[in-house]
Image: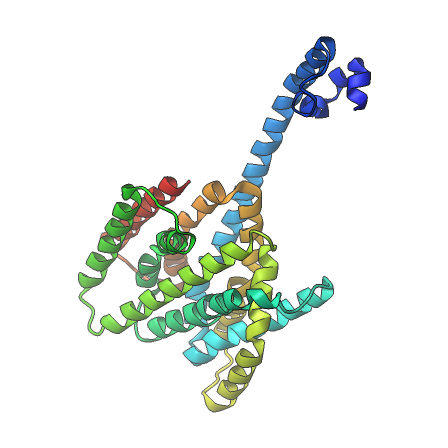
Length: 338
């Protein structure tokens, strides 16, 4: 290496910190110089890692901020569109955008054939399952704030699914926190006192499990493929089905294209279904899942804020207490896995 031949240059360059590990048998004088360079370079590398982690956290939070408006956007869209059209149509629109992006990047539209089963799970989970279940739950009377509290368990559900899928053996505290979070959700739903609340809650449970499965498979694939390409190919694979269903629903269901309905549909199609994944996955890649992923804990509280500001929903202390209780349980599950 050139640094070994010229010790003075080694002292000046922080990149020479790799010298000791690459050549442990370096002469005494040279190794001292290299170690000095390594000591100089360490703060720079540490500062760079910290800056990268901060960038990752900020990007991940932007993704969470985008996702937190999904329920209010869905409610607005359903003021002029059928809930089935909102659920499937958002995937069709996002699929067209994903196809354009993949073509513009000159990337294959379809994933390798061995990965098709994993992409099928992603499609069933986040392209069809979560949008359909959540839209129907909101259509049947679940309020945005109520849905936000139930879905607050999503990070823990995703973690539990990943544990089972990857065959990990978490500490007992992980399962205790999951159980406590589930108990808080059950207590919250049973004490709401709303007639016919069973069906919306069951549908929200289906949305929860669907998203957990989709996120888990997507997380596995993003180890080797950029996240935006994963969601894009899942949307493109589903496009032949979502496009046909959307066309049928458009001509067979009532469509009232009011400004609020179109704005809500545009939000869930462009942001919730596609664009929100870009900063989210970029944040996880830069900051690491253990750190940047913690930002997802803010999503239910953000949704409660949007429900209050945008829709005028009023919720009592019990809703806030349930949300905080679930967030505390989820935080424990995340830290036991970190």
